[in-house]
Length: 275
Image (cartoon, rainbow, N blue to C red; front, side, top):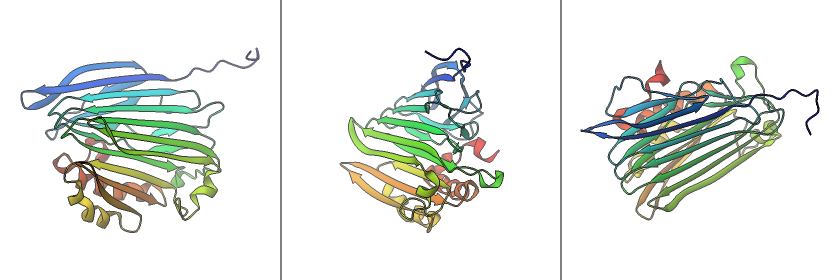
């Protein structure tokens, strides 16, 4: 039983679902569903990709909050997804904030998942899950960037928990899986050379494309000594994986802007990244 004098706190429940299809030679909206704090908006296109901006109107997340996004891109479509702002994960009094993302792309579709950074505050708790299912010939560019406190705002994260889980399948075959866990003593863990060597901002970028290997050397030139990049083939699937570490969010974004412009081809950066 909850003590009578303890207030019942309202929790965020946000669900957004989007599917797109070809309309002539352009990518257009097929279905859209929004519930709770989840909203999806579409700026005027500046390329052949349809761009969607995902919005959490609650303005941040804390323990017990849940956000779920489900996206489907039909065969031959070109869809880019981003967020209106950095997602903020505040101190959790109880439980964790949960964000789940499900992405599906049909044959020869192009899908870019390019949210702005997630900012973790002291004593926050976040579990994030990213599940991607691609059909043969589909290409995907996936990004998640995380900042452990904004140094320019005087924020310091000493204790928090963070679990980031990725599963990427092509034609039903698992081609990429990772589980990144850190906490509760985040400050000490980030200081370790094998984790972040004192950096306060990290990012993972994954490109799934037949010729992803062609981007390896240019990607390494952009990343420099602030991380690394590698390329593999898993069966017939090309995979480029990049890790970036920076002293703060400003330095991380500077490299991410150049890297996304390189890897995302003519679509470049989402419009909101530069507005």
